[in-house]
Length: 585
Image (cartoon, rainbow, N blue to C red; front, side):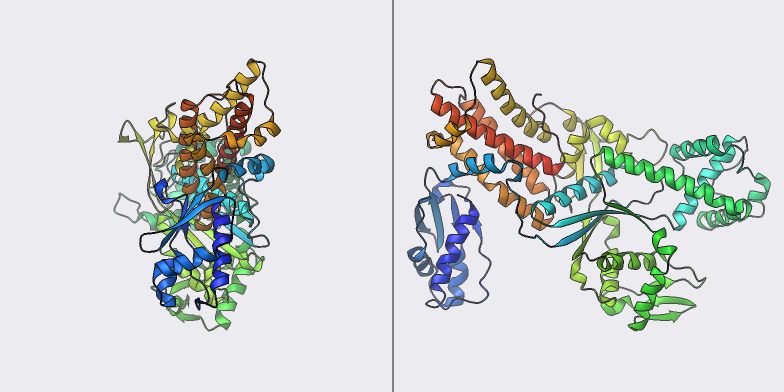
């Protein structure tokens, strides 16, 4: 019997009491929990205490009235009132055994629901600038976003996964110039690399491929490139001013060929990120390029929409959005005094396009450094006529790697980041994905590399996968002994499962659908990882205390059916996390 079945019985009872108790409308949220102490029953609710004050009666009186009209169920052995007015439900011995045939019938569909069918969500995550390889921080965003998408689909939403490629901003110009400078060095030129250029060795890799494809076509006199530029750091200059001047000079010297360098670097870097993510099991429905906005009139139309609503004004030659009218801390620039549109203006157009494309809700998964981004974008959507509640942001915290208890830096690329590829190569995709989503997204993750690689019960992903592999080994042993599994016989003998470990495992299996609903509702994959660890603990304890391949055939088949159901739920949960289910370990 599930929590939802208990809830249905209570809701029926409340409807029966609606008139006599003058119950409020709407009714308060019904909370049903599984008590930690089994002496308090299998389920309990505080609804009588919640309603008592509203109807002007003693909580125990309200609880008594509810119990009197509660529909009878053969799955409930008794109910009792505890403490100030809690209602405890004690289930019949066979109540949880119903879950086994349900699991074995539904298989991969067990735990899924269609509660949100017809509702669509655009899920944007990672969206790192294509300025270099993905690092371990992006890896958490990727794993988290992928699992959130799976959870939302599991409860009926239509989910569209999108990566927003910032390919039209200043940073990409800096990348293109950095690649070109390394290309010139490969062609034999001597130069001083700018302080604000991209330093990673991946830039040299791209430059080398540029050289292999185009040869010396992009060579220009270095003296012309650096002539009369402002000073760089640390020569007493401003590195930001210097790099901007260098970008302008590169465009002047390369003319139309600058775009060839730019596009070549962009294509390689985006392809590298896409490949990295796909190898990590993260696939998108669309890679939406910022240039799709900047090369059309979409941004201008968005600004015009804000202008018509009276939400823009001019100051100091720039065009501003009245963001403070919508509870933002300050107004935001849409168009600079030099006529260039800001990244913010492009982003407003991009977010507006999400709703223009028909999605009910847009969810963005961003890093901790984007906290201030939320109010300004919600303000912009409200100004554009979109309910800001339809735009949700999940702010994911940072990741720190540890080895032997000490913070480590694994990178061999010469940049200041730890590439996601290095992490995956060291611990594997399974451990990376599981460890990334073991904590609430607003909590920091301390990633223990030694633990992630260990083959021990302390390693949570190994522990869960080992439970699945152990069940597979039971069925291999069954075959080796010349015996077979008879599912229909096993399902007919489930009442023989009377051991305490068996009852606990059955109760755990029955909780799975509720765990998925809760995880999806809160956008929290850690509910699933926590549940799987508990389920694995229950199974390992059962495995160590009870024989499966007993002489009594009826009991053997019943236990095998329970094991098969457990294996299915482990596989379903790990599948949502994007983690494999090995049959031997």
